Image 1: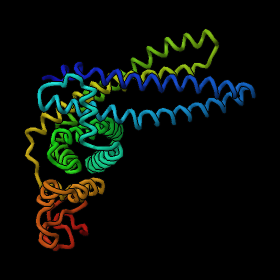
Image 2 (image 1 turned 90 degrees about the horizontal axis):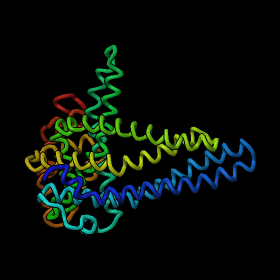
Image 3 (image 1 turned 90 degrees about the vertical axis):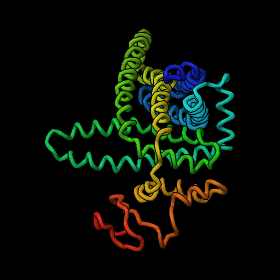
Image 4 (image 1 turned 135 degrees about the vertical axis):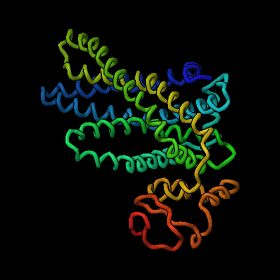
Length: 341
């Protein structure tokens, strides 16, 4: 099954996402009428205050809708994509199957939020280590713009990498969700070059799609606002909001499917390097917390995490938090970079 087939067979999630985006725009339009209408009673200064309050209120509404309902729709979509890549087929009712898989795997939304937060934080902390190499080139004349573009490209791709790591939790129902999530981050660490190459296409797709969509909508909404002698800036804000809703529903979903497809295919052939757990714990406090929860899990997950951790503290190697080098048990300073352990 190809990524394109998975995208079209899970289109129901796209329409649900578009519905959330439309609800946000509709709520914003109502709030605009209320706050700007009240502000207009106090003259131009009052309208300015009304616009500021409207923008803040729109942000609150968007966060409320996307933080809970948006996350749950996204989680169901991730679950179905994972199932499709691993099994080669999409469930007959993707939405019902996605809901069931999320409920079975995470039990409550709070567990999903906690795992998502730790995975996202771990991926970003690990990426900062990679970006430090880019900072070295920033001192070279003319390279500063290239480094900044590279950082932008990496940051953009990370929004989909952590979702891929969460997707791995649905592929391994037999083990604890924390351990599966930790495995997902390790798989990313082992395949980051291939995944970032794929992310280069993502950057171009997102920028072009958002720019074209915003411009087209601005021309339509701008003409409408001009007829009523309304602000062109407000027209642009509404155009951007609608463009973001369309991007969230269709462009982001396309990118999510494509990225997860590449990730899951790479993950199936990846032999996890267990010494990476220690290295990543030294590089990322979020990963250490994530893996610590896996170690505290009951049953097989706990045994597997303990195996990955290696022998007891007094006998296991120490990984440097600065360079990730493996050191002999009991040493106080790294043999590679000299940092205190």
